Length: 310
Image 1 (cartoon, rainbow, N blue to C red):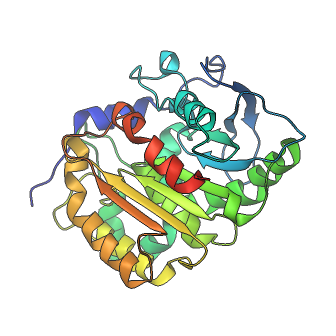
Image 2: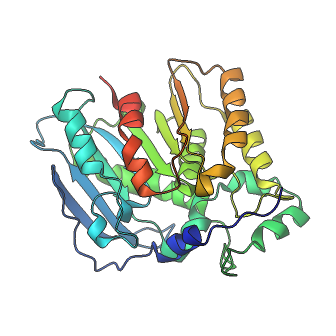
Image 3: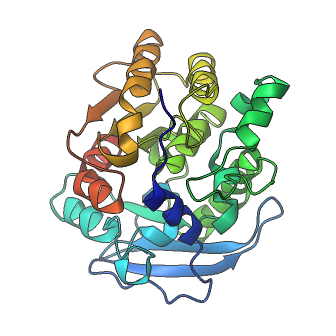
């Protein structure tokens, strides 16, 4: 298959590093509490935006959904493409309708130019040959910019940040349900990959993952690309217990999402062979949908109900 590059996606990755001085997102439901430049010994400091629903009370207990690319979740006025996930509107509506349990959403800003190195699953990469690793690290975007900016992968450190620094802080600062069955993780594209990796690496922490428009190619070329096979093999050997976990995957078929259907079909086979079925796996295709926050907002209610449904 010929190499497929999408200029708009390359631009989005380059522009996701919005200024740390950006204003707190304006929301139409609930409220945002920002923890600016949250420090870490594992990754660079970044903003963390915590969405609290209407009527949030420390006298209640809340499930927690951790979401990547936090600067794209709540307010399109401050995003590079003026799009957003509409998390506050959608989660707020589902809560008001009684379709999901009480929850808060933790939006973790990405690391800007380091986004790809933080979201690219590390252990599958380490299983590649030296030649394959060199091929991956030399990958470029359609504009000629290096995908990894000559940086080493940081995804294992990123997950340590989430599980050993951020989650303990959130559980101390807010009225959360700390157990696995009330702790979830979600993201799109590379954020879908790191969500899959997180639940496989930390099955005692996360009880469910939403992997939306999962970027199985890892880089931006298909021909002679060893990455999808490595990711799928990793998934096969690291599946969390289907008795205690929920897995959600989806994809469209336009723009960058056009690459995903054959890989997701292979992932679905692996998941079903590993014991996942109608009660703990939801994998959906959305014909006509592209790779954008607009598309993800249009179907976000589905994984939210799947993971957080009463």
